[in-house]
Length: 447
Ligand code: PFF
Image (cartoon, rainbow, N blue to C red; front, side, top):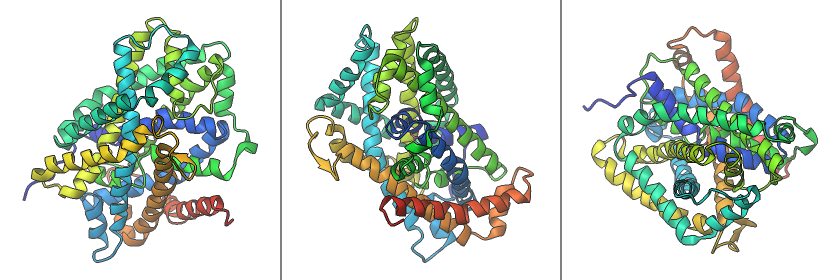
């Protein structure tokens, strides 16, 4: 039998899991969704969901993956053979298709910005011209489609090469570089005139702003930004050696992801207020605001090019994880089928993303439930499918995996106190399903 590939080091796994988590969610989505949903109130609820529900669920996915050493669909099958539970894994694969179809469109926008910043097309504009520029860029169907296509090709090309070589090698250097550059932007942004108003907007919750929608979006964001509910983390941790401590890995991934979310907010909102942008600008928020911040820096265009290259990398590592779970579920780790699976799934995703890529231009008037196609797919994935996936995992893991296995996986490689196990079990068994159900029922007006 062929030996399964494993991560070559613990840091490799953390970086890949964090690489999946950290991407557009923290850097692009969080600022614009917070901006349209009440700023500080949103961020507070997002934090609560992340710490009390998403974090325990991440551990649950890790435990499932490592205890079975199987990719997602097979993991559910192994724990509960002959039942329909493996549909959680299937649902994850379907969700990944949909998610990657619009994720890649935004990845394309980043490519366009990278190209323009290298060729000087973004320099020497006034701060308020970056918003209209973005709208022009995304309205151009040819450019948006080509960029979406190139982004998908890059993703396919890496994923077809195999898990270790493709992902691990590069994450080691790019992720730390992204953090450092982000810190530089935050410092610049916080030193702009009028920056404080942005800090207050982002970090001071005004509880009167909370609506059922705010809570729904905050919940969706907490799952989206930790790549939860799709069973990606099940697949990733299945490659992890037995001796590694899972709770510690969870702490690192959540800590890194929250930290970058905080940095993103602190980079964007001070500048939004200092330059007179609207926080509720929508999906174009970072594309309008960040170039304006960089234009106020010494060597701004060099820094911007570097930043956008690193953002592209962060986006790609998340995209790899999405295609990886699809490929792993098709090939069941049979390396011979890998290439074909990556290309066919990847190209299908490109096609599925075409309406999203066109939805800010030629398909502007094509609305689904009153939303542009792009926003409708995002809404379906982030606020419905990911929470449903998470809900099912929170039911499956404590119900189907024996307690002693759960404890063994949780305590391996660490001397964690038993009380944490009890707390964790309570959070996933009761709090997570109840909270997710309440949020849904509340939004549809049942309670
Ligand atoms: N967590 C990624 C981000 O925040 O950009 C997006 C994502 C990747 C979500 C993979 C879900 C997923 F399964």
